[in-house]
Figure 1 (tube, rainbow, N blue to C red):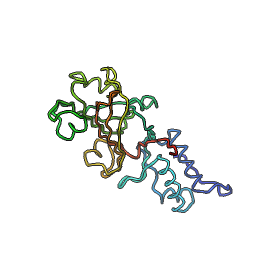
Figure 2: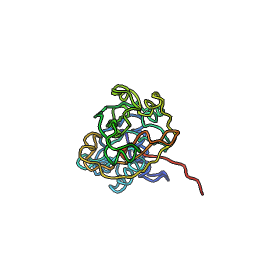
Figure 3: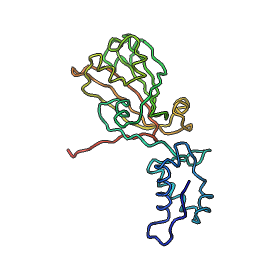
Figure 4: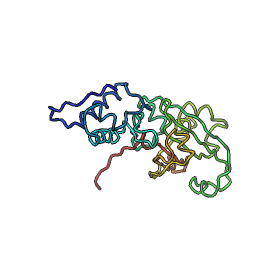
Length: 244
């Protein structure tokens, strides 16, 4: 790190100077995702300030999504957060638009019979063949989300493994002639399961944002149901609100 002792003659608060210096190191590439900051006590001694001042500076970086505090690891630089608009788009398309180099690992792809729950959501008889898809979506090399989808089997090619690795599910549906029109979705937050934390390369118990979505075609027919988990310190949603 190149962070230097703050200028005590400046009217700018000491913690703010330290935070901005650390931010410059992160945004300039001197500190990379996964790098650990000095512990608070050592950094305070080196900069000649109090430990609470350093803690306040680091908390500012946490609030801006530049670092995270991890039990057993200390304060770690994180990858830039993905800010995604709430729209009927796929995560792959949003990452590509943001030039974040989306990559996909297909964890499982199975043809199964719809149980009562999935059949009810997709408005099909129980036992109808559906494709059960689970993928790990990454931004570059950084794991970002676990995506779980159910799609009526007749809407997709028999073996769409490669298409799902190379692109998004919605793009594949569009190529198959499905015209997406609307969706219903619910956002929530919870602790990651042990498996999710392992796949996302996150600490056990890390927070994930969840999105459950059912998409409909222009005739109002359900064509896809998804239940996804996004690592909260790398991802957020943005929306516009209007008075009613």
